[in-house]
Image 1 (cartoon, rainbow, N blue to C red):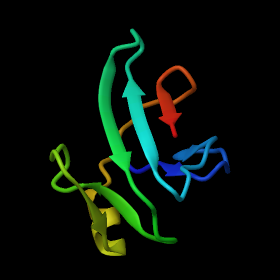
Image 2 (spheres, rainbow, N blue to C red; image 1 turned 135 degrees about the horizontal axis):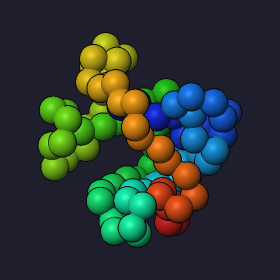
Image 3 (cartoon, helix red, strand yellow; image 1 turned 120 degrees about the horizontal axis):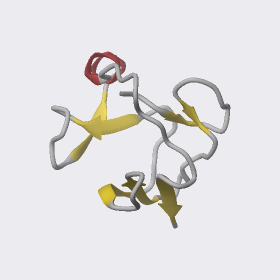
Image 4 (cartoon, one colour; image 1 turned 90 degrees about the vertical axis):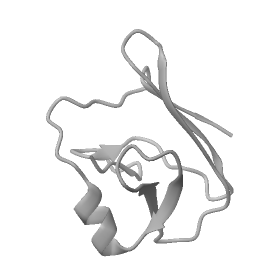
Length: 88
C-alpha cells in the first residue's frame, strides 16, 4: 500500500504532512494497539522511503520504480486521526 502524507485528501492521500525535520509516525489498530512505529530524520524533497521487502525491519530510500513496485493493493485499509499519529 502506498499513502501520500500531503494534505490533499482523496484516495491514498492523508490529511497531514510529515515535517521535513523528522518525526515519529505510529500506526494503531481500531482497538488502540500500536501496530508499527517509524522514527525518521531530516527528509530530502521528492524522496520516498519504505520497507523493502514489505514488512522488513529497516526503512530505506526508494527509487521511483521501487516505490511503485512495492506498493501492494489493499481494499480494507484506513488511516484516520484515531489510527495514525505524528509525534515531533
